[in-house]
Length: 415
Image (tube, rainbow, N blue to C red):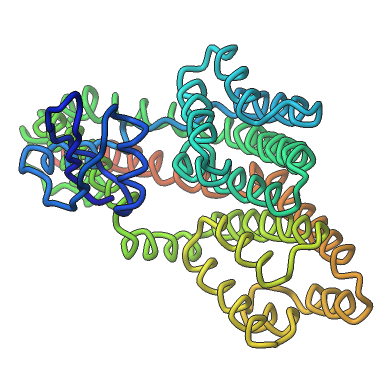
C-alpha cells in the first residue's frame, strides 16, 4: 500500500488529508467517498516516521491480533448466504443481514466490511481477499468460482459442504490424537515432578559418597540443575522462540518454504499433508472443470489455495505446461505427486471428453486415502508414544537405581 496526500477544498478552505491506497486512481476514489469537498490534488508521498513505526508495530503483532473465524460460525454464515442469494436477495443486503444477526465479533467485522466494499463497487472476491487469513484459501477459491460461473448460490452451497467435510476431518483428527496427547502430557508432568522434587533428594545422598556416577544419573542431575536453576528462563525462552518462529512463518516466504519442506520429510505428517493437499486440490479443480472453467484457469485457482509451498511450486509446473499446449495428464505426471493409476484415469478422461467426471473419481480416491490416514492415526502414533515413555522410564530407573546398587555393593565390600 502506498501513502498519498490529498488536498481538498471545503467551503473555500484548503486542507490536506492522508490515506493509503494501491494506486493514485484508488486514492482519488477513496478520498471522494471519505471526505466532503472538492479534491484538488492527490500526490504520492513518504509516510511520516511515526506512521511508519505504527504500521511496523501493527505488522509485528498482526499474527497475535488476527483470529481465525470459528468454523461453526463460518459454515453457518455461508449456508445463510447461499440460501439468501438463491432467494434473489442481493449479496450486499445478505452480508449486512448476517453481520447484524451474528454474535461472533470477528465474523461481524469481516461480513460488515465486505458489505461496505460491495456497496462501494468492489466485487465479492476482491473484498474477500482482504480477509484471506480469516476466511481461508478454500473460501476465496469457491467465491471466485461463483463469480466466474455466475451461480454464486451453488458455489456457496458447495463451499459449505466442503467446510463441513474439513471440519469432520479435524474432529476425527482431534479424537484420534486425544489419547496419545493426554498420556504424553501426564508423562511430562510426572517426569517434571520427579526431576524437580525426587532427584534432588538422591543428589545429596550421591554427593556424600563421592562415587563415580553412571551416565543416566548424570543426565538426570543435569536436567534437575537446568529445571531448578534456569526453569523460568527456559519457559521464557520457549515463548520467545515460538513468537519469533510464528512471526517468521507468517512474514518470511523463504523460511516458510523451508519449514514446509521439513514437514514433507517428517514421519506421518508428510502423508497427512500430502493427501489433504491432493484431496483439496482435486476437489476444487473438479468443481471448476465441471462448471466449464478452462483448464489453465481452473488450475490457477486450485493451486492458489494450496498452503504447502513446495507442493504449490510443483503443481504450478502443471499450469505452465497446459498453457504451453501440453496435456493435463503429462503435466501432472511430471510433478511426481500422482500415482500411475491416477495419471491413466485423467488421461482417459481427457481422451473421452469426460475430464470432469474422472476428476470427481480422483477426488473421491484421495478423500478415501486421507480418511484412511486419519482413521489409523491413533495406531500410527502409538509406537512413538510407547518409545518416548520407555526412554523416560528407563532413564529414571537407571539414573536412580544404578548408583544405589553400586553404593550397596560398596557397603557390602567394606563389611
